[in-house]
Image (cartoon, rainbow, N blue to C red; front, top):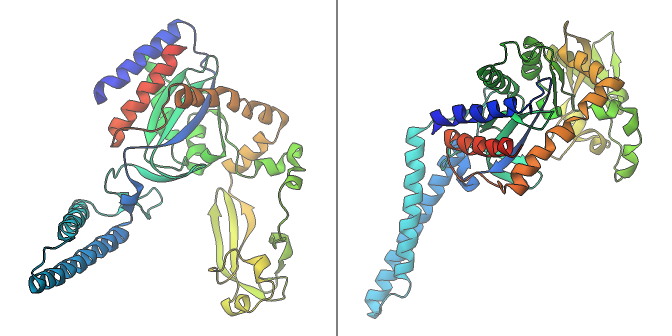
Length: 385
């Protein structure tokens, strides 16, 4: 089915093209996170799974000791055991769980994410991911779709075992180009076309891909609403919280290259410069003892586990900074007008798939099978159009 689903999807897309349902000039990108046929209780880092196995084995040993003691008492009293059968079944269940974890650990190593750090593995479906949603934490997949604006036809869809959208634009654009070429469009069919996506897709990887494809992309950063004058008074509706110290409350001493906090303590330079999202920062760090006894700690540090204040001060921009250029484009009147069309293009598609077509979870395991299921629903969406 893996080899047949993509040609079938392209056949449906070709019919949409023949029926003049594709505009081909304006696209919206969005996704939805759905649970799959995988248990989040069976997920964790390799060290977590080892601890879980050890805990189960200790429980088995404890139950075996209790069983031996119970057998001794029954032999002494010549009585029939009352709970021995239930304890035996519990021991067998726990042994199977421990063996399942042991088998997984022998076959799989640590699962490494895009940033080179270990992420959670899953015994039931190791290609799925634990993701945060508005309804809580789920174990599942992230279904993505690139939608044409003319009649909300899905040009390309794919399911990813990753909750973050920071790396999804390159495979989605490559897949969309392949589908458009298959139905007769040119190789540079995306050149100078408009693409809109929400701030979850704002990352150097995605912006660089849009730049390489010469797309007219509108992907805002997380702070674009704060710069929008139409949202200048939105804070008045939020509950009042104690004001925390911001970057403006710290004074930078140029002579010693240190920062002075509102309490008068000095933060020493930790990193001369580093680059994040095209912006050059310099990092300063406070002494842990100063922060520990500070009376203003509650207004400076978040949480009780944080020991000291770290301060990142922007000192410049990288030449050709795509983040800055994108912010300037989004903040224009035309940029805001184009970006906000995203809601009317992509959101109804996912509402149709999730609530009218009743896809509230993926029922299969592994990325290949889940992707087939996702493409089938994308095809149904296009057939309806």
